[in-house]
Length: 246
Image 1 (cartoon, rainbow, N blue to C red):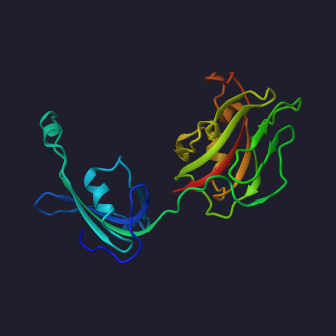
Image 2 (image 1 turned 45 degrees about the vertical axis):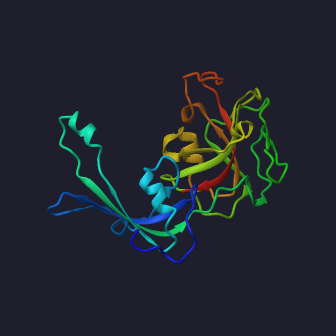
Image 3 (image 1 turned 180 degrees about the vertical axis):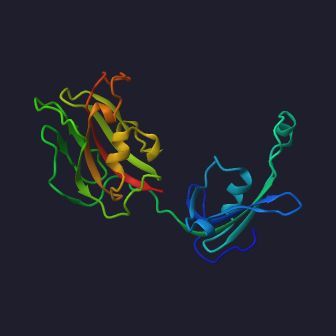
């Protein structure tokens, strides 16, 4: 630790927002390998067990406004077993500039009254799960349809972010449910760029706190490939609460 900082303390489980600079410590030039001061894009780091121990402990000793220096050497044993040149030891300097707010428990905002014809969503309010019904004789839309049911007031999601969401997914026309994070009792968390195209297109730009219902045609879902609980060429319907983005 170089400077402890004077703001709010950091605790395990927080998502700290940092500016960081990385140096290659080779004993010669010690060149800068990268810096968020150059990219003007602070990074968010979750203080969890996935971090190296030195960083887990280091972050919990600094406060907002503090500066943390960490040296992360590569495993010397692993280096001896490979023919590739050893990576130099890295020196990280982290400036803690804030903490991401914790994810919401459920959508928060004003109901819009919007809907998709043939799909019903019951919004019970509070932190209770919405009820999605997709049994209908209506023909499934051929294009992606996204309707906002509850308009959140948070920042708009970006395509390169990781989202925290609660959702229920059903098949258009049959009311067959194939997935629900609500029933697992745990929100899902994933990089938006790594999910089906219907989600990528439908959830980018949605304000945090919103509840949306999406009808996703097969070509933006799983197409002709059957999945567990999802027949081939299915139109997928999701109701999604966007709880956080970072």
